[in-house]
Image 1 (cartoon, rainbow, N blue to C red):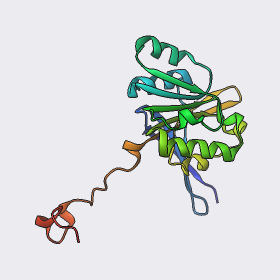
Image 2: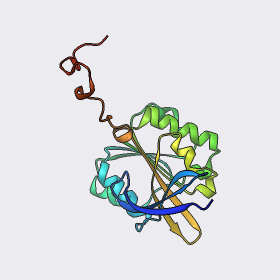
Image 3: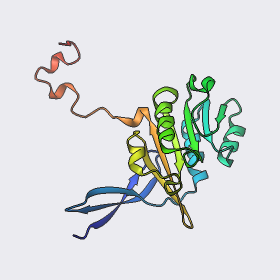
Length: 196
C-alpha cells in the first residue's frame, strides 16, 4: 500500500512553528516527522537559553558554543557546570540544575551509557533537558529519546549531516486531562473533598 504524506504546521515544544509531515497507511500506522527547521542549531539553542534563563546550567559534551557565550555575557550570574561525555562526576551528580544541555555528547559514549546518563539527569539533576544529536553518528533512533520522554523539537540539516534537537520539560510533560474536573463526577459538590 502507498502511504500518503500530509504536511501540517506544528508548534514545537520550544514555541517555534515548523512544517511537519505524517504518513498514514493501512499497514504502517501514523508516524510523525519533524521537518527541517529554517533556524540554525545556534539560534535554537539561543532561544532555549532565552526562554528558560537558567541560573544554574549543566553542559555535557561541547566545550562551548556561541549561543552560550552570548548568554553568559548577558547573564553573568549564571553558573555553568561543564562535564565531559560519560557518567557525571560525583560532585556534579549530587547537584540540581535549572537546565541540562547535552551537545556533542551522545556521539562519544556507548548507547547504554548515554541512556543511563540522560535518564539519571532527567530523574535527579534537571527538570529541563535539551539534547542536540546526530542520530546517524551516535547510533540512536528517535524512539530511544521518546522512551526517555524527550520530544523531537527541531531538525537541522547541513549537506549530509542532520542534527535533531530533543527537549524535555517536566512542567510540560503531562498536561492535566480535561476530564479531570468536577463536571465529570457523579457528585460534583464532593470533588476534591473526600478521598476514599
